[in-house]
Amino acid sequence: MLVPFSDLPDHSRVWIYQSSRKFSDEEVSVIQEQMDLFLAQWTAHGSDLEAGLEVRYNRFIIIGLNQDNASASGCSIDASVRFIQQLQTQFDVDLLDKMNVTFYSGDFIAHKSLLDFRKMAKNRSVSRDTIVFNNLVTTKEDYLEHWEVPAHESWHNRFLS
Image 1 (cartoon, rainbow, N blue to C red):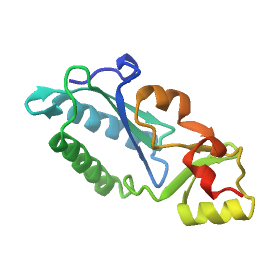
Image 2 (cartoon, rainbow, N blue to C red):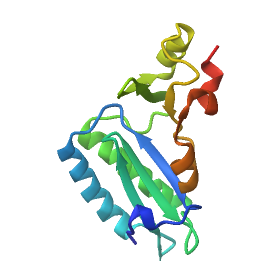
Image 3 (cartoon, rainbow, N blue to C red):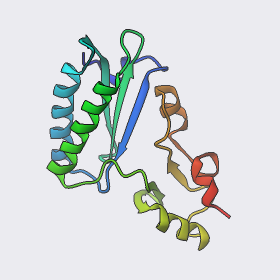
């Protein structure tokens, strides 16, 4: 069952998929439409899942799931990953590679491999105060409060001198 993301409780589970490139506004419209259709029929063991979606900065797909009524099962999670894989193919982007880092570079959002981010940290091109996107957050509350954080407040801290 599709609900507005804003209506999901703060303890809802979230999955964040970052794109290897910025989507155009037209692509975002198509993604939202297709994701809405998927989430409207998303189930776990025959029970409707109460889920919502956000697409942020034309780069991040955030799925939220209220687990109060029904929790995602292995099969339902697999179905959502298969759907994300279809979007990857359709839009020729990478959405599942967790070995990439997205962060602010001035007013722009940069996307680099973890290796390149490490090099940038070593060369002091990024600092402990660089705002990074912590895509490992697992709840809506953490997403709202701890997703965009200085690198020293995230797992990215291990790469800073």
